[in-house]
Length: 392
Image (tube, rainbow, N blue to C red; front, side, top):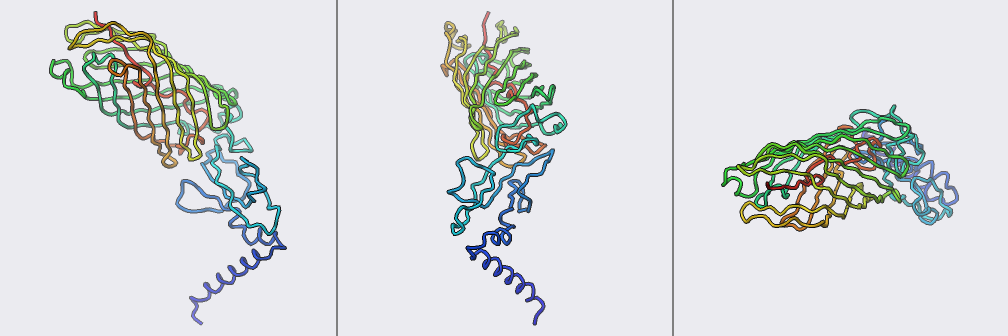
């Protein structure tokens, strides 16, 4: 007999043995033993293949986002009972694959990895610098009162944001980040009058934050250095506080308070730029796919209606604000990320947005698996740093 046939015959015999055991409705233990490969199959969401592992999760200081498929009965599984190993109550009932669970295993000390991370029990011993570092590159578009009613800007944004534990036992961390926006005029007026054709902005944020149980809060200071029709250095305070009502939904508030203004010249016109104070309530949701979204509505203080070509109108009263943030993991290391914020009315208020790719060197692109000491506050940008203008 050809030797190449022997392995095939052996595989056929083993398959027949497994099928025979599965057909024996009086011996569920045989099904478990002969189907152990399938019952212990673990799918690594970020690899190209499968690997075997036990049902008991191993403690790993650098956990990965996983999904498990276990034998269970649809009738015997309780709603939301992810990860529970439940034997079928009826041996004649067909075995089904439990729905895929997406676990937040950033806290290696928790027994249930499908609940919100608890930074207080995480500890700094399992934190590594790359775990909380993110790098961003994308497109940026902005129109604000500082554009004198006749300009808008479009270009690129490059940023880095990082966090680390300060008092790990209390879930308190520190964050710091900086960015460069390089944009061109989207309207010709500034070019025609000889003011400028480009704008360079550097936004930076330094702050403290805490994730403790379902509560989270953050307080930081935003810096803006801007080289536009003149050079300006501005600053504002910004904070956020929220409560996770479920493992997937969080409600809270965020606000920014103007702190530092600066004066300069637009050609021969003296002007002053000032951050706008604003506040919003938000809702954040984490989808089963790993995508995170945030929506907010709020109020901003009034802004100037300066127009270089047509003259100035009187300052507005308080204005309606709305915006959104999206965070879509594409794989373990890369996520599509962006923000948008709008202060009405659109003709004299703000229209700001950016969108691009965030790179996570530590492999924590999925929001649910990020280290509890990942920065809580988004790095400052035009979306959260609206700038008003005053003509003198």
